[in-house]
Image 1 (cartoon, rainbow, N blue to C red):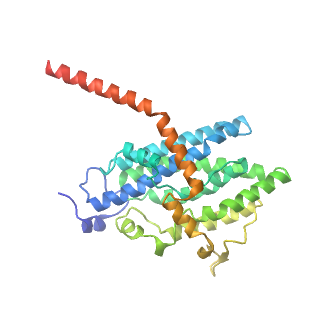
Image 2: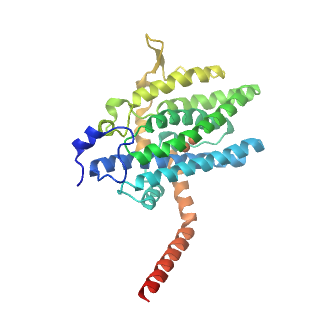
Image 3: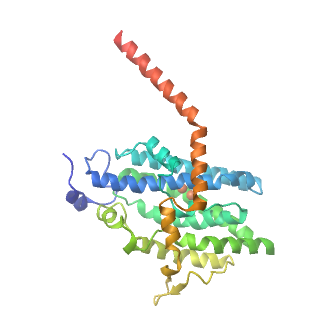
Length: 316
Ligand SMILES: [Fe+2]
Ligand SMILES: [Fe+2]
């Protein structure tokens, strides 16, 4: 018998529910929404970084970038599987929604990234922010999600080290490298602070997701935790924190961002896939999806032939 929502809320705890449970549609829809968003973000992040496999300045960086991009695609696939097991959408549907511009993904991956100095903004700061959130998702009530996070978090640790190593090299490099890295940081810093999404009173999905154990920390808690760990790191490498958005220090010594200084109008236009520069990323995904359509067709044909052969044998 299908569990009712009240029972789900009552039982909600780390890794409590699995495909063996008959869960209500509200739970399955909320978990699918989170997982699909997360999986899409992994894929879109990988596509943003892919050109840097070629543009890496050394063999070591090239190897690290190609490993990272493969990891991110793997994370996406793992999460699509964890989403699929909820029975709301198939992996194919999620991938085609992403290519059609209907799939939602992280704000940071809507912005184009073209310069080498920008790469640690993703690999160090955005992956660092992702680690913060993902570490809490190991406690998700949807067991396949939490289980996927064990592998994902392990690999994210390598991504952050790789990003930190590029940042350290650039900030210890020539004056020009330092200047370009500072400029990239100023451009990306507000986007990075928006990574955790809108402030809690503007987030519509949080309450239910928290009540059923899909989320364990609020957007604000995650942002504050990230800020307090990464703001000192940025300063250690010689980056200057921009005046805007304003950062204020609380009585207990922790840091907080003045959220009104962030461009939430741009954020919400991104959230609806209506942000102009972001459409370039979505179109690139569409082209990449179309380019391998023939592979899907061949696989479908083979599957149909195998199924046909099997039926034939059974009839004998
Ligand atoms: Fe990832
Ligand atoms: Fe990553």
